[in-house]
Image 1 (cartoon, helix red, strand yellow):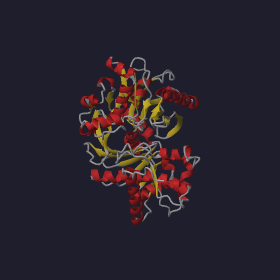
Image 2: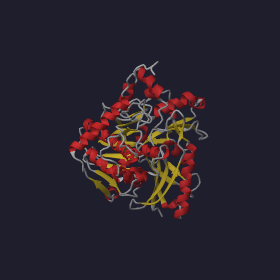
Image 3: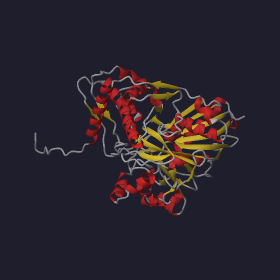
Length: 503
């Protein structure tokens, strides 16, 4: 009766439900978008109740359109947008505030205060993460400082605080289970990546009671049983939870030290498996747990980019320069190769390796020959440049040479971007047949955990397309130098002359 694994990918833009068959192939998929709640300050939120309703609707559509029953689903694997954080009433399951999205920098003042107190070094040593509002801790601290109900519930032991995965596990199990996995925990800035426990000292820095945080489990653990709030007549095990980037690393088959993947989503994650011991970055990369599988921990170096796919969305929704992302490859191909414009997408600051939350976006090098096609190309190129910056830094800090970059996400359909990524890196880029590596990684892990899949066989069947470098070394260096100059202009803070009284 058990023919499928259900992969759930709860991402920044929406939620996906994918059915994987015995051969590990997607046989059915349902997507639901959710609102991006952005205010005048640029703060970004999601409604967690909307995300939960969307997940229920996804399951209803899967059952209705495929005709399957819950008895045919062997297990569930969940991947989720990381760092996005929320708090809810443990007894009622009602959120006390919207989920604060990873892109949101509202915790800047909290981090700045800790920085001034000299706490940044300890935060980095214990968590592997540079002190930043990007991570969950400052977001949760902001909720405690600004939502009176949250503070009251924490004092009485009735507050749950966590990332989106812990919210979904809680809802899927009727509130019986409050759990997260090691990969998500390692991105909160509250988890000690050496002793693998919530760090009471760091929680104290942010005013958080460790008892309000979920139990931390292996990524392939049993998280509980679900009937999708009564939609299924039987219960199904949730047998894997990963942060989306970690799930993609696993789904790419990057199981050995030195293997690297890049995920192209709203933002992007470049992640290198570094094996059984953490490496401390001195240049802005984060050290996290790649995963913990059956008690065995693997670590990863990672660089996170705030805006990649979201920059293309900006071209479409705000600038109205394109009707859809599918147009951009042809427009970039048709752009004037002599144009020297660059775009630095610092909409809400810059992530790795710069970590400047005050930086703002910049178009530079614009001339009379710069038109619509050239602007679109500059936006696409900015994605590749940012990923190349991180890949280059990873090689330096790990001492490992990247042999191939495994890529995933919707933007991998863009043939111009994939070729430019290869050219600017001078490293082969491999695109798997399936673009949904986060859901696939979680689903494969769940399937392997229950014996539904054979680990070696399931990864051997993944088909890939390989891009090879076609750019001369001199041209590559010229383009990289231009990009670095553009970034410096974005980060440069100079005083303008006083023009008061001048006409």
